[in-house]
View 1 (spheres, helix red, strand yellow):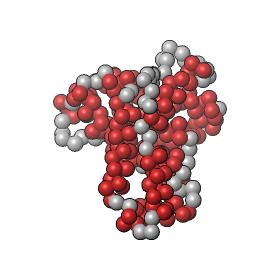
View 2 (view 1 turned 30 degrees about the horizontal axis):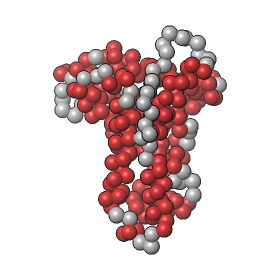
View 3 (view 1 turned 30 degrees about the vertical axis):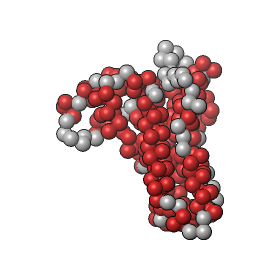
View 4 (view 1 turned 60 degrees about the vertical axis):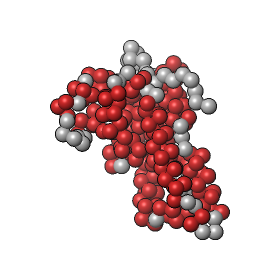
Length: 226
């Protein structure tokens, strides 16, 4: 069952970089929301079905499409439960998803592939290639191996990217001047900075300052590359 109460906000009144118990709860809530809509079980079921099938044709293409839709819906549900998203008007919500959903889906898909352990065994990569083709399987494996980091960090990065001011660079209809979301710079920056702070505090708590800096830099680069 989906938890009834989520709080994705990090307290902004404390400048102390030590991650106390009260500071960690937003991290746990972010991952709780993400896990509630995660299609990990479906991915693992897909691999098992293909593994036991005598022919790839037995795995219906509609099931593959359904899996992709599950990933998409899971990511959208994850973002839509964030308080920063709920307070936006419908027009702003639409604009935000339109400008960031593709990036979030790509990052989220890579995170799911890593978390499901689909490339932990060569036989799984072979099964994956039977569905999506060798080229796609090899590229996906390459990206997963490069990312290779804490799944919680990936989830925190995704919620950060969802409210990233990078969406200013994406213009689908030439309507930037009329887009009320982009005119509300202060609110977007506030959300982005709050989630970045949660990500940084978690990194500091788990890895210490020096290692956190390295991981933080690597994660940003990998997400941009994706």
